[in-house]
Length: 126
Image (cartoon, rainbow, N blue to C red; front, side, top):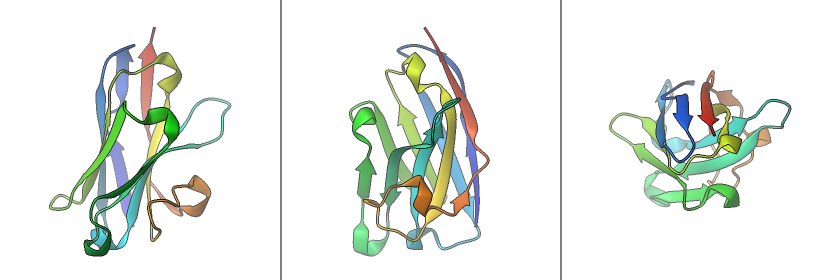
């Protein structure tokens, strides 16, 4: 299982970024892909999870604090999951990670995920 994040960078408050998580080495539909983030001195936090398998088409789960601002989506042809982030705030500054696991999207907890990318830094300035 391999995952690689990209799309991070620096943005001013109120701006947008789209992160990508390119995956390989496993059957995409068999796994839920999640986005998580970790700010300095903080624990890793859930953002959103998605599973696009036939039996669970379009199922997503979001943490309350990102609802309405962040959107998770997937491109099954590219085996890639995206995180569109709008109305970014300085408190969104963190390293953003994607992870994969055979779990339902509602179990979107970092402790349950064993397959991780290397992370991408997002910095939001005020």
